[in-house]
Amino acid sequence: MAEQILKSTTGESLADILERVLDKGVVIAGDIQIKLADVELLTIKIRLLIASVDKAKEMGIDWWEHDSYLSTKAREVEAEKEKDELAKKIEALEAKLEPKKI
Image: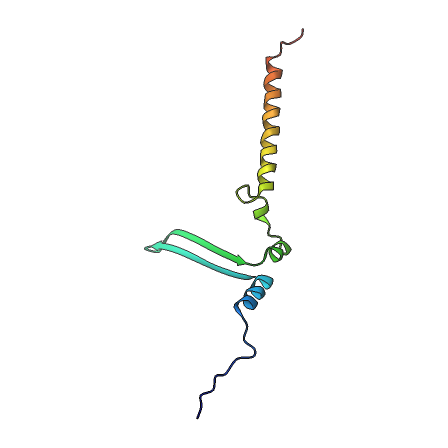
């Protein structure tokens, strides 16, 4: 009797599974607590969301767009703010140095 190799017709590839996870999103949550003699010394709350960028934006999550370490646009905005603040400080100092008219 010959052995038969059965193939699953409903099997999904890793790409299909990844696409579904990124489309729907997955949340992993956990807490780590360190206690000594029933005294809580440290609590670490871990929250991990795995989703596509589009799905994250749909949920209102877009922090990476405003982080200057991750976004060139955020760095430019931050640099422009610093430039404006410095210009205001220079104007204030110049106003203090100008002789007062009596």
